[in-house]
Amino acid sequence: MITIKSHSELDLMRKAGKIVSGTFEALKRSIKPGITTKELDRIAYDFIKSSGATPSFLNYGGFPASICTSINDCVIHGIPDKTKLCDGDIISIDIGACYKGYHADSAKTFAVGDISADAKRLIDVTRQSFYEGIKLAKRKNRIGDVSAAIGEYIESNGFGVVRDYTGHGIGEKLHEDPSVFNFGAPGHGPRLMAGMTIAIEPMVTAGDYEVYTEDDDWTVRTFDGSLAAHYEHTILITDGECEILTL
Image 1 (cartoon, helix red, strand yellow):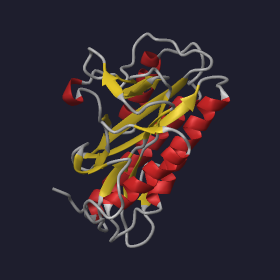
Image 2 (cartoon, helix red, strand yellow; image 1 turned 180 degrees about the vertical axis):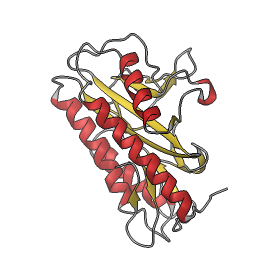
Image 3 (cartoon, one colour; image 1 turned 135 degrees about the vertical axis):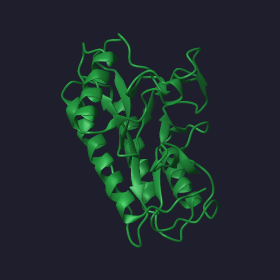
Image 4 (tube, helix red, strand yellow; image 1 turned 90 degrees about the vertical axis):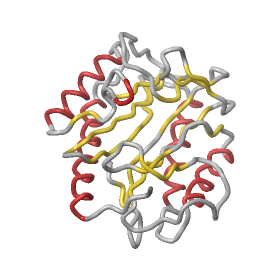
C-alpha cells in the first residue's frame, strides 16, 4: 500500500534526510587509499547515533553493518570489513538513518584517489540519470515515466541498467510500496501523488546488466566483472517540483 505522509511525518523524514546527508559529509574526507570499509562503517555509525538517529540498515534482515560499502564490480549491499581502499577504486556507499521512527535513504559513488576517465564517466552518468528521472517526478505523472527517463539516459550513454533491484517507497518502513524501476516504458505504474515519499536509485554497470549474489546472501556483483555505480536520494512528491530530502 502506498502511503501519503502527513506534515509531521515529513518533518521527521526531513530530519532523517539531513542526518544521512551529514553522514556523507563526515565520510567524504576519510574516503582515501588505505582506509578500511569497516573504519568507514564506524564513522557512519558514530555520526548517526550522535545525531539522535539509528542506522536503518544495521540488523535489517540480518545485515551486519550500518552502511553498505560496494567497491568496483560490487553493485550494492557490500558488507564493511577489513578490506582497504586502493588508489583507483570506486566505492558506492549506501546510508539509511531512522529518526523517531521514520527513515531516509541515499547512496553515492566516490572516487578513491585517481580513477580512470571511464570510471569517472560511469559515476557522472549514474548521478545524472537520477536527475533525468526526477524531472518527471511530478504529481499526476506515473512511476513508469520516471523509470523510463532514467533507463533511456543510461542506455543512451552506453551503460547497463541493473534490472534485479529497484528503488522503493520509504517512510515508517525502510522499504514500502511502490517499487521504482530504473527502466521501462512511460505511462505505466502507479500515479504520483503529493505526499508520496520514494527512494529513486539508479544502479548502473559499465558492461552487461546481469548481476549475481555472493554466498553471504548480500553482496551483489556484476556477472561480467565490470564496474558499477549507484546513486540514490529520498524524494517527496509535491504539487510542484519534487523535494529531495537527503541533500
